[in-house]
Image 1 (cartoon, rainbow, N blue to C red):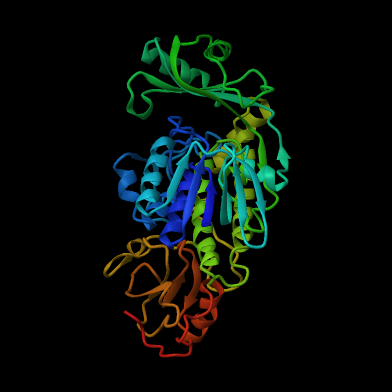
Image 2: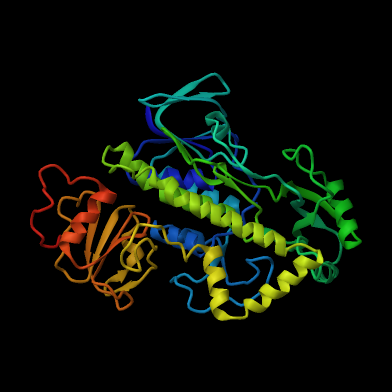
Length: 490
């Protein structure tokens, strides 16, 4: 029996596999597809996901295959300059095709020892007090202590659990695909510019993934397909392009074709016993703002260290349940944001008036910063109760006298950043690092960071610190009472 089975080998599942392996958890990833997908519906990483990759020492890999961007249009297609003073040391996104993200995360997970099995379709799931049995389409069965469904919007795991998925069905649909075009590029650009004055759900972006002559085509569909799992045809694209733009641009040789709607749903529960849900298995929404892939990766980032603590038997009461308590509200906020963004993308007079109003409001720097922080998740704060203003927030990558903060978070352990040199994590040193250093950017004596970089405590009292360490990191190691020496470990 393995520790954890992750169902689904997309960005969420692969990120989770790596997080679990950093903590020494045995993990098997079961992916239905026999080969990695070449489709890249997700087009990049927002600032918080860039931070996540930096926290795990992966940012260099992504920078080598991505371009930075600081563009507006993240909210309802409203184009505004990137705001000043966004609370991050990484005030940019990365234009990274989803296929590249998956390749990089898979390589990382394998390096750490994750087992990834392709061509493995899950069809059955039962759990008891001791573990979970997963049945595969070929008749085989696997046993694990825990299972996490990261298997997409049509999640088999969620269906087998019987978890409700309330929300709204799709009322509009959009076609999306990569293909070549025979029309002159200048003509294509001119037509697109004109059409997008009134129809923001339309576009032909040239040179996709650096491939000259390949266009990413997006165009409104004619209604909502009865079978939304069936990809559209090239003829359907041509027909809709002519209807919207008056020409089909001579599109041909498609690499892949797909459709997406504006359905918005969220799982009622992210955990049922020993089975959990993450990524699109837990929430679906329109791709407005490009938040879907990022939301899933950040789900995994929140869950990994908590599930690892549970597997190792050192999780304090309620730690694993805090995954739902923290991430369900985040998912709900993203769903609300994308609902608003889709309304702004409408073509009726009301949507046009709202878009004009929001455009004027976003001319105020504070409003622009607020909306950009919301879309990119750098403003995220978990409700950890009363305390310092940093409590519950993720801490940006502050500069220290000796390097950068995120350089000390690569191993997914807790961290006490101690500017006083008088504190101690004795008793928790097997899971919490103690860094005595100072930063001109941090106006608090010390902060205790969880493995996901969120602030669990801030202050200077050893007694207060001792009250917070067990909440997130469990009881002390045997033979090391928390009342032992308070001298700092170095």
